[in-house]
Every structure is written in structure tokens, then in C-alpha cells.
Length: 339
Length: 252
Image 1 (cartoon, rainbow over the protein chains, first blue to last red):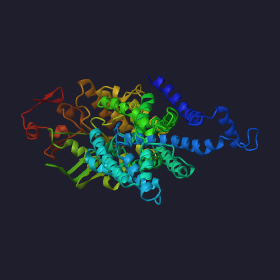
Image 2: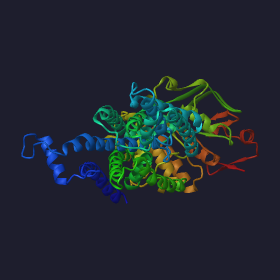
Image 3: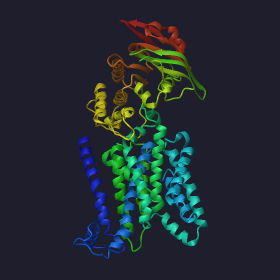
Image 4: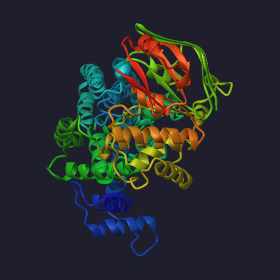
């Protein structure tokens, strides 16, 4: 049993190192304008080694470097951010059904970003506004849940209330938005990576990079925190301080991603559960593997969004179509053991 | 290390705990007994500082626990709950390793030294062959042993165990109590344990503390304090005490 799991863990880590890069490279071929693999290769080689045999202006360079690469990097980082923050929050609240969406973080961040986009004309960066409201949302959930915050149902219901509140506030923003802003806001809210440009990524990727890295560094601590406040405190952990750090990092990474991608739900639920099924519950494995497979999931979802139809399908719809049945299965399992 | 309690107060709703003064001797097993609702577990949690006392202090070798950081406290006092309350199905070794939290920096993971300490703890409780087993696959008795192993991996001088034998069959009950004796005897730990079974408490304790209604009614070595009058006063029922082959048995 333990030998099989060790083999699975090794395989999972090897795949985690290779798969995101492979999918990213393959994804460069996919899109409304299909670029042959050979042309992708020569364009990249030409850009990396200017003056070489493959150099010279490529007709594909603009599409690859201005449109596709930023979009794919955003998918990679946003997928990692959502999956890692979901896994971390599940450990922190010792609640396998908690993720950024059920804690109100996603809609809090979406409201903040929408406020910035529609009314503040980006005077306040969307990432900053998203972060502030993501934190407000998670604090509101914790206040409403009160002392029962570690109970699955209480925290889910508190999250539903806060998410509903921020959805209503979002509707208010939509109501007052001008028709042009409204159209782009609605499309953005459904979740889309099409808005990715290097300027936004310059702010988003470092925030996500730092947040995810620190959460990965805290991976073993999350094992201790997942024992519950009393036990963790008895083991010498400064629970209050470490809890705040994890919540802030989870909100920060989710908000940074949401500010650019819109609301992409369920990644933070699906990925950590699949990883636990493969390698067990130890967060030393779950957190870093969630980062890699979250990145893979969003890359693949974006590939489907871009290529399944003649128009682009909002990626948030795709992740919901997969995530909702997954959540129902998990709810039915609730009360039994969690891997 | 000696534990001294001074004027400890804690209240929750209608219930209130008040221990004017109580000392727990070094490297001895002290059992806290009393009827349901007497405040045994509350007293133990106040000793572990899991429940914050509204007044009073707990001293370990004259060091007030309230003045220590969480880390320093965890190196002195270890708490073994009745049942773990975790949600995720960690392996036995991963679970025992959490006992090392006070020795591992926040951004680090357990080192080889920590793993060796956890394996030593598992060996001490007789579960050396189980490190890879998922915790939820263990029997109740094995789970209690793993909980004790986690606290041994923490390596505190004082161990507080909350009803470690409840719901266990006689074989596992004795296994746990023998282990508790070894903790005080071989490892020189100060052990404070809440128990329901009076016969077992008398047999395995160096000292006993009888509680009722949130107060300590009597404390001392069982041979000195145990009497039918005390049992009647604490439990409100008639119980007899028999001496059989040098052992004191309580008859209901």
C-alpha cells in the first residue's frame, strides 16, 4: 500500500515538473489562427537566438508573443494560484469543501476589480481593489460563522451569504455601468484569459509568484494547522498569526488572478481533491502538486475554450461545468473519510 | 518537573472551576477522578492553557506558563486529547510528526532528526511497524497510542492525558495505563491523567485528585485518602473498599 503510494507520489512529482511546460508549448499551437508546430518552434528559436539560422521576422511572432504567450502564462499562474489557495484554505479550516469561491473571496475580488474597471478608470489597480474586497469577504465569512467556523456547513452557508452579497453589489456596478463597459464587464465576469497583456501580467505574475511560493513554503505547517486551533496551539503554533498569513496569501493570490481573469471557480476544489486521491493528505505533497496540476487544468481548459467552437467559450463556464458535478459527488461523500 | 496551581478560576456558562492550590509531583502519575461534569477535563485543559483561566496561574518549576511563548510552553507541557479532531487522513508517521511543530521553523519541514524522534516515539508506544498506515484505518486503542506518541515526539516534561482509556476494551485499557506508568518511571515525565475507572486509577496512580462541582475535594496518594466516606461524598452513591492480595478494590 505504502510502496504503491510512494511510486504514485514519485510519478506525480515527475509529471508535475514536466506536464505544465509540455502543455504550455503545445498550447502555443492552438487558437483561432492555427500555427503549425514547426512554425512555433522556429519562431521561438528565432526569438531566443536572434541571428541564428531560424532568425528573421516571423509572421507568427506577434500572435505568439503578444497574444498567446501572455495568455498562457496567465493560465499557468492563475491555475496554480487558485489550486494552491484552495488547498491551503481546506487545510486551514480543516474543511475539505472550502475553497476561495465558498469563502466569498472570488466574488469579493470580482466586485473590487469591477469597481476599479468601471468607476475608477484603473486609478486604483484592479489587483489592489480585488485584494481589499477579497479580504473583506473572507473576514465577513469568519464573523458570520463565528465560533463554528470549523464546521463544514456553517462556513459554507456563511460563504453563500457573503458571495450573494457581493454578487448583488456586482449587479449594482453593472446597473450603473455604461453599455460599452457593461459588455466587457459581463464577458470578463464569466471568466476569460483573453484580456491578458504584458502590462497586467507585470503586476499579476509577481504577486501570484510570491503568494504561491510562500504557501508552498508553509506546506508542512498546514498539516499542523489542519489539526484544529486547540491542538495546533497545544503543539506550540502561534495559530492566530499563522492563520492570518495563510488567509492573506490565499486572498492575495486569488484576487491577483481574478482581477485579470474574472471569476474562474472550482479549480481550488477539484485539483487538491484529485491530488489527495493520488498521493494522500500530506500537504508537503498536496500544496506543490496542486500548483502544478492547477496550472495544467487551466491551460487545458483555456485550450478547449479557444478551440472547441468557432467563438471563444468563457473559461469560467467550462470549469463550472466540470466543477459542479464534482462538488455534488464530494458533498455526498461528506461525513465519510477524506483522503 | 513539578506543577503548581494557584487560585485557578475558569467559568463557562453555569459551570465554574476553582482550584485554590494543587501541586503535581515530579515524575509521578497523578489521576484526576470524579463524576461527569466535575470539571476534570476543564481542569486539564486549563493546565495545558488550551482554555484560558480567568484568574490564577499554573507554574512549572516556579515558571508561570502564562509568561511563556507558545513554543516554550509546548516544550514543557504536552496535551493528549481523547480523540483527534482532524479531518484529513494522514499517515501515522505524518500525524506523529506534527508533535515536532515547536522545534521546526515556520517555513521548514521536518528534518531527519524530527523523523527519527517520531519513529522513536512510535517505537516506545509499540507501533514501530505502523508509520505508513493511514490514521483512520487504526483501531481505537492504536489511535490513543498514536496520540501519546505524538506528544512524546513533542518531548515535553509534563504530559496531560484526557481520558485516554475511555471506550477501550480491558486489554487496550491496561496497555495504555502500563505505558503511562513507563512514561513516569522510565522517561521521568510528570503525568497528569483524567480517568473514569476508579479501580484502575487506584492501581496505576501515585497520587489521586478527587473533583466535584469544579472543585478539588481531596488529593494525595490513594492509600492515604481513599475512604468510603470520600467516595460517597464525591459520587453520591454507596461504594465499598476491599483489600484483596494487597490491592484495593472498589465495590459498587
